[in-house]
Image (cartoon, rainbow, N blue to C red; front, side, top):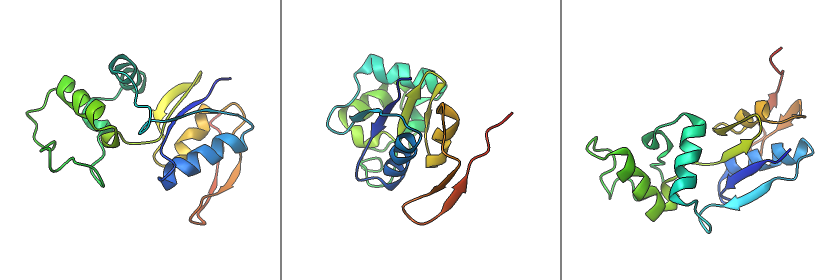
Amino acid sequence: MTVTIYHNPDCGTSRNTLALIEASGETPVVIEYLKSPPSRPRLIALLKAMDMPARALLREKGTPYADLGLADAKWSEDELIDFMLAHPVLMNRPIVETPKGTRLCRPSEAVLPLLDKPVRDVVKEDGEKIAYTPET
């Protein structure tokens, strides 16, 4: 199975998600999207696969969101995508793609249903324990 993670190594949620993927036995394709942002068609495809409007992928904290006035409803879908392409830090993370689906994995355990062999009991970086019981 091919697993791709759009990753920011400075983000705890992204690191936890990557650790969950690796603990499941997968060796993911890791794309550090701040260094290698997706192209416009790729970003549009990711949004479509997640069934998510661009506004829902915007990150406010630690970004130029407020300075750019992105809270204003005047911005179109295409304009918001343009902002994310110009400022990749505006993209929330991590995004994970597998044959089972594509999703923004916040919280990190949102990745578990996307994996063939998800780990059952996990401890996050902050010490929080999570248990995963697959839906039957």
